Length: 361
Image (tube, rainbow, N blue to C red; front, side, top):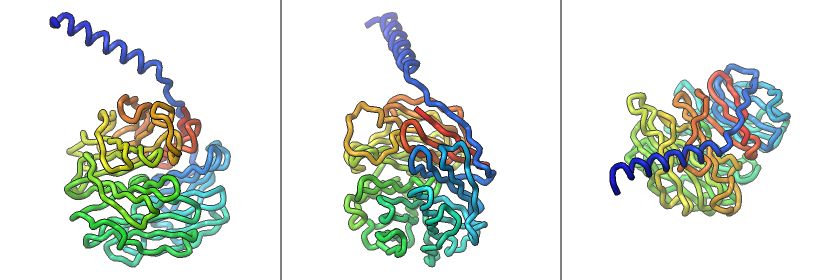
């Protein structure tokens, strides 16, 4: 092939790609008024109308009309804490998980409300000096996990099977931790669940970013390497699976001198192996990601709408892909920490200064 022919081929290919991208319908973004200026770090839709979000200064917000109006609350006794973990069951029932800002190990707590946030019961208060609880997730309203960074080579993992009345230590079930291995409490998505017994944990902070995976509700776990960059400030931040086999992980580096390692990787075998996707158009680290389908589905066709993923990287921007990382589109958003969907028609991004944006495909 001559150079002239090669140039013509590349021009045609580029034009075809541009036309294909133009045919992709971009999502609708609708800013909403959260009623607070406190930074929001986690979001949990129950359905297309009921959504909870949580964040700094003990703050939580809730909508029951799809985000047209939000109510704001602060958990008594938690005014100095950050609720980086959240799981909403209904308009009345939700769980919050806190981290502190003072280094006090007892600042890591789990609260539950059964009356829409009017009152809260503290179900767990950490006593382990080295623990740092990053994420919380539930298979059902009664069965869930809480994940902590490693302490002396052990993950002090918690599990409940009775709606949080008891949080039991299952650290003996976990694989040994690598030196410095930890997760990132950036959006409550370092822990993902699917079905009734599958779960995945994204880690970093060590020589390699890993996925810890269980298929039996946390009784046994395996650890698998990912190609996401890892260092004390880097690793896999966020993970999601749309069925028992197919999932995506995202991460990067919080070090501002290393802004170009925000990457995603996909798995087709339940997290055992991972392949890097094309690089997304964000910088820094991917704080959160979510399937637009809402995830947690049974096996579906490979080319259906469930392959769309939205990512957010705080100050590094936001983007979405219709095909799990082959093609990327930037979103005109910045400062968002977390994203979650009830359905393709109803997703929410939350972030700094109480910002909330609804995203609809």
